[in-house]
Length: 102
Image 1 (spheres, rainbow, N blue to C red):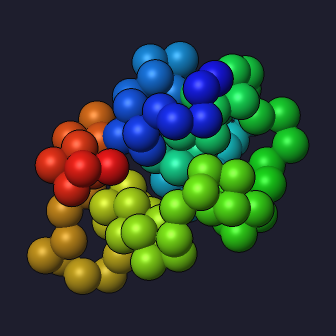
Image 2 (image 1 turned 120 degrees about the vertical axis):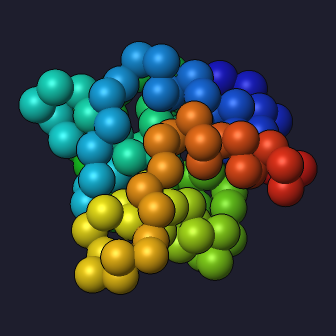
């Protein structure tokens, strides 16, 4: 994969070949990923067989920690105890990132 592909597009590509999961970058059974895991899958051009640490994934994707945390919260909001949190699809997260120019 081209290293210059925006994060939003990497998430879109990875979302087409994986199902969504929450709480993990990847789940091997069923080829599931969160938004960041979808981006990493697209960047590598293959499904992730060994789940990296969040810090490793952030470094490989070249995003800063605060952005990664925001994406993680949007993906995993259902895991939150805050009833006002809205869970987002990976595609909605990609749309939000695209509006940010990412």
